[in-house]
Length: 195
Image (tube, rainbow, N blue to C red; front, top):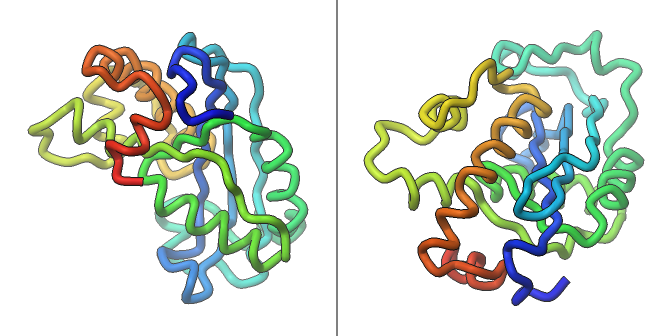
C-alpha cells in the first residue's frame, strides 16, 4: 500500500494487546490480542480477530487486577508464534491503528522476533496522537476517558476487543477531522506523528 494513498481509500486494522506487564524487553509478554478490520473511511467492520495467548509465564497479580485475565484462562491458550502469524495474515496490507501504538507494536514485534517470524512492516498510526491533537485540553487521555468524551458507551476497558472497538469509534470520529485539517494521506499522517 502506497503511503500517499488517500485516507478515504484505506483498509484499517485496529489492534490492541493485553500483556503481563509494561516492558517487553524485560520479559513481559502478550496474553491477549484483538483486532478489527475496517473498510476505509466508512469504518465498516469487515472482520474480527481475537485470541488469548499463553505467555509461558504466570500472570502477575497486578496484571490480572487490571485486565481480569488469569492463569486458568491461559493454560490451554495457544502460544504467541502461531497466533501472531495468523494475525499478520489477517492484517494483510492494511494500515494498523492502535491507541498508544508504540506500546502495542513493541509487544507484537518482540513476540514475532521471539518466534523467528518476519517483523510487521505495515504503516502504523497512533490514535492517542489523534486524540491529543483533536481534543486539546482534556484532563487526561486514557482510552476509556477519551472514548467517554466522544460518547462511546459500555466500553469493556482492558480487554483487547473492548479496547479495539473503542479505538475504532475514535478513529471513525477522528478521520474526517484530520482531513478537515489538511491531513489527507497515510504518509502525511505518519509524518505529522513523527514517523
